[in-house]
Image (cartoon, rainbow, N blue to C red):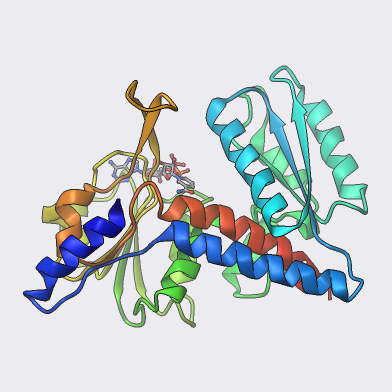
Length: 310
Ligand code: NAP
């Protein structure tokens, strides 16, 4: 549907000589999976080990189950080995730590993720610290966060990594641009701000990291060449907050009940897409933008196992 919309906006923007491009995460992620599948074939031909990704899912959260199942499907498509470990919601912290210890010592498992959020009785930080940094394909362990901050080779959290990859593949200009990141979480906003300010492409931005205590957020956004919205408030970024020609990346995913959909829900982003898109040079849709790129980035990180080992 956004391809049709892209054409409509292109036609409109042609009048002012500024084409708008929808950054298509679905198509780009499919391409990435194809490239990874070729690399898997090469590894096999060289008689080398094919990466094996494991995922631990604790409890029955519907969204988490959907995400984990999608990750397993992605592994199958690319040709990676995959193992899904499902634990009941009552699993204790000690039991989860034991399962993690097992994965840390399992030579067949090259990387693994612990699907978040965890049930409230489990201390998330304790769990993330227990993951062997060499198998931490989510890039959440402090050792890997430190390496990312120093721009050393390591696993990068999947969502920011997916966004960077999308910017790279669409050759979105970033050097010297004012970039506003809304949201400072450890998994999205904070690493995004670090990556976009790094001394390479895509990067070299002047980054402003905003959060719930930021004053004059709307005015700050109006000065942005690039906006990354990652706060989880549907439609938060409105047209009057966006300057003409900006690039807008919508990370937000909020599930809204919708009985007209087969799934029973629909997904809303943090950006008022219809109103904002006509002002943009580049924009990501929801769904079909950052979400699929996040999945692809996890697969890229899993392939990195072979490079970081060498
Ligand atoms: P989070 O941990 O809840 O963090 C939200 C951030 O937004 C916080 O830093 C918060 O500020 C800030 N914030 C909240 N309300 C604000 C406001 N009115 N003005 C300015 N800042 C505000 O969320 P997250 O995990 O980063 O996720 C953010 C969104 O991205 C969610 O919708 C999530 O579902 C989605 N997401 C999507 C993907 C994907 O693959 N597409 C991946 C991960 C997350 P404080 O720090 O001051 O509280």
